[in-house]
Structure formats: structure tokens, C-alpha cells
Amino acid sequence: MMETHSSRDDQPVPNDLSVVFSAAPASEAEEAAPVDAAALTGWPWFLPQDGLRHEDLVHAVDEDPRDAAESLARIPLVRRAVTLLEHIGSGRPLTSEGELDPADVRALAVAMDLDLGEQETVSMREVGGIVGPWNALVAGTWLSVSGGEVVPGEGMVPAAAQAEDPAAFVRFARAVIVLLVLESLRQGGEEGGLFGGPDTFTALLHTVAPDGLLLPATIRTALDQGLVPADPAGDPDMDEINRYWQAERDLGTLAAYGLLQREPLPEGKAVRYVGTVEVLVEAYGALEMLEDLD
Image 1 (cartoon, rainbow, N blue to C red):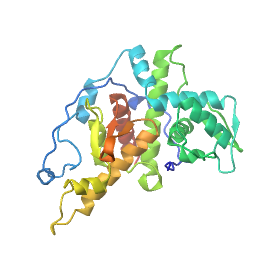
Image 2: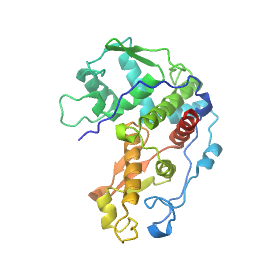
Image 3: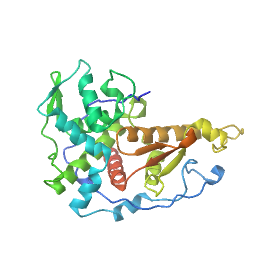
């Protein structure tokens, strides 16, 4: 079953986001061996204890625009944003729900190499790989929705081509990433966005470890493996279960939007998330921006 994602565009964003548009190459971090959850005072039981720290990101900035452009162009969200802009062209009609029609969704799925499964008719909101770039492009005014159609907008920074102007492309790509995370944080987990708790951002830091971040595939798996901490009565702690559920839900949303890679492992016991420092930098930038706006 495909996940449902929001495509809301009713929240304004600040015009000058240059302070958080930064980039960084992938950094290596070692994933610690599993430890007793009871010994992790306040630490998420489902995460390794060691890894990249937030403050480490400032030491991993790539100053070369060509190298940064190549790294950013490999992120699915960025590639799909370029594809979506090209598909919209001078404009496209929208359905009564304010979405692209099914024919456009199918065409975009092919162009973006997305799997729509067996369904012949698919709503745009069901396809995270399209909703992600759509939300970012609308938030950044590269797309304008009005009067039953979507047309090109002015954009807060030029939507430059990578080959023609790498530095401008870097600025565009960073803006797309930070705006999607910012909009998802403001939307909130109950509405299809991100819960955005500290566990989510700690988990993100571990996705750039050499082998990515391994998580139990489900709470049932974690319970069967005896990983979930107990409450004072000796039962599985529901607060700890909720911590896992919200963080894993957020990582899954970011993967659906094209900011992380999600890979179920054989036998269905675990799932691997793989990220990049470029995404981490912009995600933390969006979090800091949201805190400044509140």
C-alpha cells in the first residue's frame, strides 16, 4: 500500500534562506555494537551510542561548487524537483483537489523511476516521490498554484541547471531540501509531515555511518528480540515504543520524499536507512529556522 502524503501550500516562508543553505560531503562514522537498553539513560534504545555529532557537520562543508553540485544532484529529491519543473513547463491543469491529474502522475512516475504498483489510477498525494518535490517547489515559489492550474513561479532563487551554473544549482538544490524539511516540520506528524523530535534528528546523524542505520523493521520485531525497555511494572514501556514509532515514521517519510534511502533487509527483521551529510546539514538548518520562527 502506498503512503498518503500532504501537498499543502498554505504557509508562507521567509524569503532569505541563505543562512542555512550549506553543503557537506559524506562523513564516515562508526556504528556501535548493540548495548543494553536499560543502560542508555535518556538515549534512544534503538540507536547506536556513538556516531556523527551535530557539531561535526560544520567541519564537513564542501567549498567547491562543482563537487557540491554533483553531490546534491545525486539526491533523489533534487533530481525529481528538476524533472517536475521540466514537466510542468509553461503550466498544467489541476484536478478539483488541486493535484496533477492521473496522466501527469503516471508520466512523472516513469520519468522519476517510481513504482506505482498495480493501481491504474493513482492520486498525486499517494506518491511521496512526487509530493516531496511538489511541496518544496510550491513553498519556494518555483511553482504557483491558482485558478485550477499550476504555472512556473519566480522562485526565491533561480532554478539553475547544474551543467550551466554549478554554484547557482547548489543554491537551488539546498533551498529545495531545506524548504521541504521546514514545511514537513511545520505540518507535523499527525498531518503527514514530520514529528521532528530530537530522536529523529539523532537518528539522522546515524544514517551517514558506513553501513547506514539499522532499525528493527517493526515494534513486534523489537519486542521479540527483547530490545524495548521495560516500565517499572516490567512491561514494555509504551513511551519508549512511541519514541521508536515516531522516529522511524519520520525516517520513512523522508525516504518517501527522496531525502534518504530505505532498504528492507532479507527476512523482514530490519530496515536500513542511508543518508548524506548534505541532507543532514539542511535538515538541521530547517530545524533551527523553525525554532527562530516560533
